[in-house]
Image 1 (cartoon, one colour):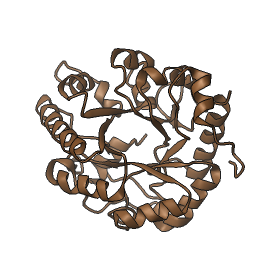
Image 2: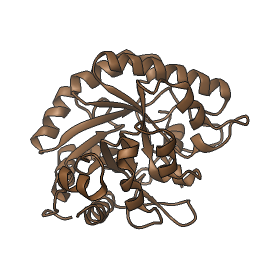
Image 3: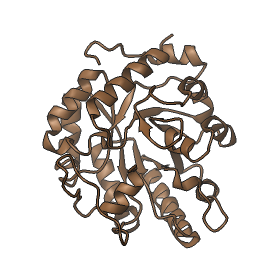
Length: 309
């Protein structure tokens, strides 16, 4: 199965009448701070969004989603647009652009591996992408121009302790620069962060090695579970550090990513711990699903059901 980390390594680079959950209702239900409306991560549409950006955003809005986290694009920039242009389009759709993801350092196609296939069965490719290590200030400036509240490192090299150390330095530097311009910086995990590297757990090193005041976490719930982690216990050990979540499900073997509510994760238990985590926003995501719209519609309906009073 291809996840986002593998994807980047290989490439180098509903309802219309859905009920919007009020912040107050969620807070009362879970004794948690007000949780924002259900958001979606646009990586879910990586295979199709560039063919019709406006149409894709309209379909997302029609399901009932209100918040957006943007990601990578085959058109470059922000789905072929400049930050303010894309921000205006999102606003016109009645959506809020909350967060944007970038990469920590460049990736190369691993020896002996083949690029993933796109929706037409052809090798998938992305244009060269800027990264925080080499183009950090530019990426932060673009986030500021876009008006997003969060900039997120989607992944970074972690295969050796030297890479982890270098990545932590980049994360700390980025966090300080983001704070200076009023943007919150966060780090997004996959499951690899929970596998030992030279006897140490990368995620533990990242949590301990980064400044908790300037480097927050966007916890991908399914990848954490796949890595053998209980998200609620992680929140208890690091209270308030997880303002962002990625919400996706996983099968009983902890292999296949699924639409929310189609797998084994106890989301109610996790949302019960929203206050401990410090959660502010959460984004539904499904890595390269067969039908992106069907997946986010199913996920929205499930979350809308379990989060209602």
